Amino acid sequence: MRTYLFPLAALAAAVLSTSCSQTTQANPNSDSRVQVTFSGGHDTDESDKGRPVVLIAAALGVPTEVFRDAFSRVHPADSGRGPTEDEARANKHALLQTLGPYGITNERLDEVSNYYRYNRSRGEMWRTTDAEAYAIIKNGKITGFDITSGGSGYSSTPQVSVPGFTAAPSVKLAWSKQFESNGSVSQITLPEAKKK
Image 1 (cartoon, rainbow, N blue to C red):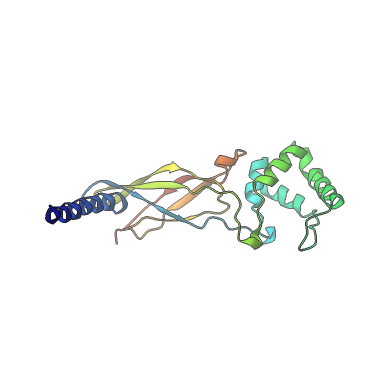
Image 2 (cartoon, rainbow, N blue to C red):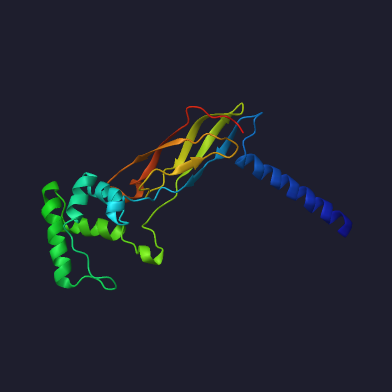
């Protein structure tokens, strides 16, 4: 009996391996869907000192430069400690002086600030969700993309690659007051792709 178990197990493994490879690699002779790879997309402007200002501004519904100007009026606490009550109160007042005319309340400012709060010195990242998309392959060529999840939390354009193809797709991001769709991938285009 043992002499027949190994061949059957090997055959099952081979079938499973073949099935998996068909979902991840482009087949030039048939139509298929190939999952793309996203990388990066969490860069910040040097002047923002690591803060995801574009995401915070979008969540508040104000132009990026408006929030950047508001934050320039804030005096951060000394390194190694959090702000005192007086410092926190003064900083909040400075922010709302600029953001208040745009309808931003103290409660909303706290909600957004807390959502995107993180400690960069500890290697943390603000809240993000990876995007997921598939390249549509017909006759060995990419004809389009199916974005199954736009993700969220991208502060800069992520790089996208398609296994088996050399050209790099272009990505468009969308901004929203809703956290779950703010900084999401909304469009992927590839004018021309040549197979490796």
